Length: 360
Ligand code: DNO
Image 1 (cartoon, rainbow, N blue to C red):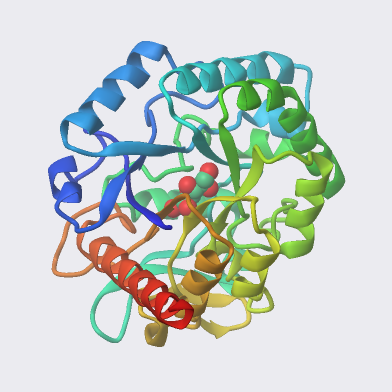
Image 2 (image 1 turned 180 degrees about the horizontal axis):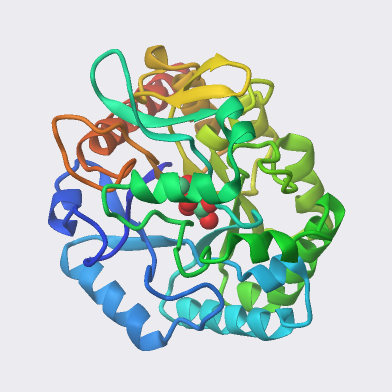
């Protein structure tokens, strides 16, 4: 069954109080993080316990972490990586001790997700994240960073930490020798090193796909479609090594057949991000409402595929449009994500009932 959650960035970074999340029917918990801890540092047990107590006091559970970010040294594979992997292992141990058993992460160089517009207007007047490949080709990374920061309404966007991106040129320089193969090998190295602690505490590691699933600014991409994911699952062939099935990221490539991918990844999907987007033309897309007919994906088939493979993990409605004059971090307002959660749970209820009727 789908365990519905909302992403929550913590009391100092999120406009949405836990009490509101609790009032969305069917939402069991949150996916959260210690947003202020820079990638590479150990998460202290004390802080994890505090976070957990706060969430539980609101009648919710922590159903996973998004993200424990990976330090660039690990992705680049330089001599500092051992130290940072050791720190990562300690963080996983501290999370495991508190009973937190799902960790989402990504292995994208320099930038996490990339968009060219954080507030593109839809025909109904709502605003959404949008991407246009031509714009990316016409600007440099610094301009994109400045643009993203300037249009985030003063919120710190996940993956766009100013201290980490303070010197984008140096970061690009550091990744100069890192091609697709090296990046993949460094990921496998990392996973093999963390495997013992993940298995000891039964922590499921869920890699987030690249977003979008093609190279931006010439940076390599390794989690782009079924073949690549399968290759990674095989390279470290153990259940702890799994994926965050993000429909919006895999779906940036219209050739990725999302329901088919879900079925092929049975047992290795540990977390799902379920949302819709509208393909405008090649390399141009914008996010849409969750409802199938508002975008290019068939949400019914996506939820059905998850149901059919017996998926039993956390899901979130992922991003939402900005509607009803809400002021919140772009993509992470309350209103549209709540609508999305309801829609997804509605689809699931219908699928389950239908199945029961067939079996009767
Ligand atoms: C954007 C998110 C990503 C995601 C990370 C996971 O809104 O989908 O920032 O959390 O890539 O590590």
